[in-house]
Image 1: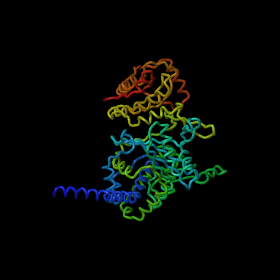
Image 2: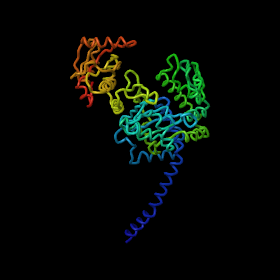
Image 3: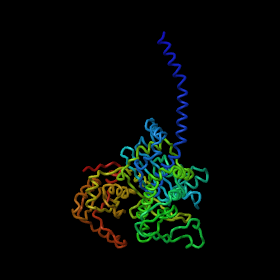
Length: 502
């Protein structure tokens, strides 16, 4: 009888306490969300700015391990994220795709045009990260393919129809043409960047070379009738400089500097220096002990950042990738370089655009879908030591075969100097013409196995004549170590997966 009474009392207690526990749990979650939100904005800003302005992930767990990361409420959310039986979108297929967007913002003319578009793909199993820069002038088909639209305008058009819908709109549009799901996006404007630097009292940056850009656009004068009045002369001297927000943004965005500072490589290096300076200043222990300054910065973020990440997803993703090694971060660019996948043209409306040089997005889709496939490190070291260069020619009628193969041999460590079509497109089996006559034997062996090709140590007369004509029209032509002409068997090899072992 006593045992029965205890069971009844226990059951009543469970029935009575369960709703209270649920209510209390809801209160904790609601309170957690309210308290954590400002800090999540700071996480988002650091991650997004780093990617948007430098294409490098430069923040580490150690640098973020300061007082707000140790707050009990954040520890609690972190625990919930780790223990919850939920996965981030893409985690089940071992690839999380995030679109990182940078735009001018409300105070700029055309402020909703996305000046920077970067696809960040993360592979949870290996902790690898690949950042692919998408040019703002890339034209993509809309309305059932009847019309082309620059990708940077999608965000603006969506915002006109429905505020705060641009990030999702451009994610879906880009995902469709790349044939991958892009489930998440971060969007930040330049005002947040400028305000952050100013709130920090400026940042100290070492300028490695004098920067002279005579064509830096002046905000608000983009359509000035006097064309020359649209630009200013941006001059920054070599050495250590204290930069306010405006100057830091100009230094990071300058595209037309002389003496080598106009290249994308030089620009990326300047951006990395700026972001490192901001990170060091922001995470300085003296600044972290200034709660008012931190909360002023966070308050500024809230109107300048947009994302569809949920709080638990941010925390879980951060926990998964907070210690990513620099060697596991790869930067790629879609461009119109000689070996690039894009070509420039003028649209029917007279606008400058970039389009796939193959006529469709098949090559680009292949590139995007294989960004994580890689050759063993031992193989890449062998090829890299010999600094093997290669020219790839399509000896078939299979569209885009040379570009796809070039992407694959690059992963083996080869330097692709030229891609094109062969005048003879009836090759059944691929052929490697070795112009080193066996001097780079290791690279030749690796290439032969990878593409399943025959090897020849001399060029046929028709190919010599063809190359001579092409060289006469080029400036500073590069003679490759190998010329690879692809045959029909390359299409079969390319469609499958070829593993190259040591």
